[in-house]
Image (cartoon, rainbow, N blue to C red):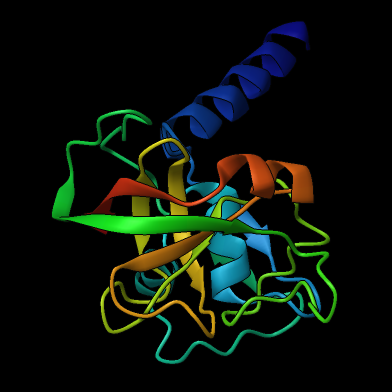
Amino acid sequence: MIKKLLAITVAIAASAFIFASPSFAASHTVQSGETLFSIAPKYNVTATELKKENKLKTNNLLKNQVLQIPKKTEKVSATHPSNVKKTFKMTATAYTANCKGCSGITTTGLNLRKNPELKVIAVDPKIIPLGSKVWVEGYGIAVAGDTGGSIKGNKIDIFVKSKSKANNWGRKTVTVKLLKS
């Protein structure tokens, strides 16, 4: 009896080992109000990568839909990324989600008040496409997830948590690297 029980246990454990993937990609269950653009930065991927991984034809998501998160095979350095598509010199200012008249919701649907840890920049979509992953000198890796009335041409606005951090950032010329997806 003990031998049979041991044999069954070993068979179950072996089949679990044989059929299990050696490394599962993460998954995410869509919550009400979430978009590809709000989910992607949480996993350090782009909205385009999420869409491709899940074979989505549109950007529309359903509540409780389970998305597979693509595995990243290439590490991106926070100081010197190697997967650069294009490099720009840009004027950078900073903004918060709590200014007078601000909703805290970006053009791509990111809720910056609920997710103050997100690294997001406002861009001119004619220069840097919305949803792109970028590296900004002095800020790090971020997603191009917003636009702004005065953000035209080679200007960006970085999102920061507080007005004091925005004031400390000021206005400066920075290197911005558009990263490959």
